[in-house]
Length: 268
Image 1 (spheres, rainbow, N blue to C red):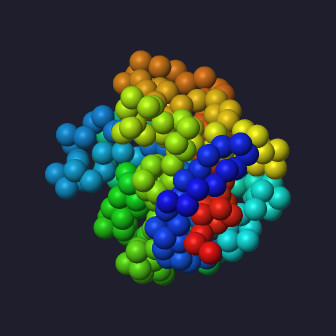
Image 2 (cartoon, one colour; image 1 turned 60 degrees about the horizontal axis):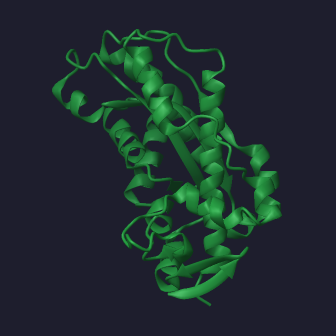
């Protein structure tokens, strides 16, 4: 492990593992974060659909990065203005049939596919989002959308250019902040967002890009949506904007993580 001191914080890095991870990523990339809701009336769906479509996208945010050099704080500040996001809930709280559900999902898949193709994206970078990756792959199995889109996206996924930045960042054996470890419990893990905030809290350049102010948590979003689809809740007008802000905040966390990995963690 290589040891650094960054902004007054002790940082330990396995540069060999990180360098291998970064070399696998092909640019341009899209850093993506989704929010999903669960469907409650699943008994009317085909058996395979029940298994594969337990969650549905209702919000997505992503940032296009053309080259690693764009991940500096100065350039991220301008990139921040070009964060793409789409947030929408279906008017129906319950889906009577599967086709209505797929029609709603197409809004988000087309939005995503169009951006991937327009910006010639070669790699997707997710943030601990295996559910979202599976949703996209499952969509390919059920979609009857425009063949040119489906073929291109199928090829994209077959190339395995999908990365989870939390796999590196959350692994304390690869990226570690020893002074924040519990001395009595060496196995406790520091979460990705908290680890990021520790590292940027004394750095004005990064602080201007990312402030630790996500107005609503993943848990709160999930619980609220579950209640909505159980007819137990009427959503406040500002709920969807809060979700959009949360998505965009998480995307910027991902960009900041990659920025740190390139700046401090590549093997030299």
